[in-house]
Image 1: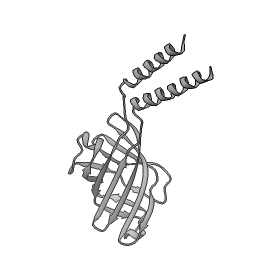
Image 2: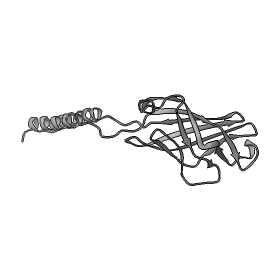
Image 3: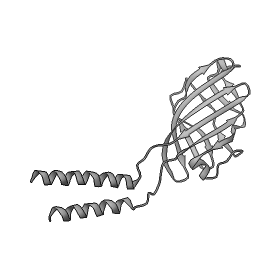
Length: 181
């Protein structure tokens, strides 16, 4: 088989792979949710070691990208699960809204006093046919309630980009072969 035939065959194979549809993708988007709570482990936020969400209900303030595309809008309700921070090393379910569920790693305290509590965490969101996706969250709690921001997203190359990269590498390899002769 000569070099031209081999090159043409490989290019056709790469282009064919680029045309294949993806069966699942990663979740992209942000959620802003809020709910009422009481601190666990003390009477004030300064003493808190956990968050008890009253009624385990949260309300969506904003949703973007894949969350919005799956019908999540401002005013929708979901479930948020009580949790402790600073004492547990286990992962836990944090929230569930419209078929999406977030599994969190242990929370990290960013700031804590009698008036404000700020936590950060990471974990994975699943649901609605999407691949398990890494995400991050921030929780700000004060005497008026909580505001919880969640962001998910992973940069994944699309098939066409991978194919173009492959074709470029193939062309580079063929030019090296020609120079070697």
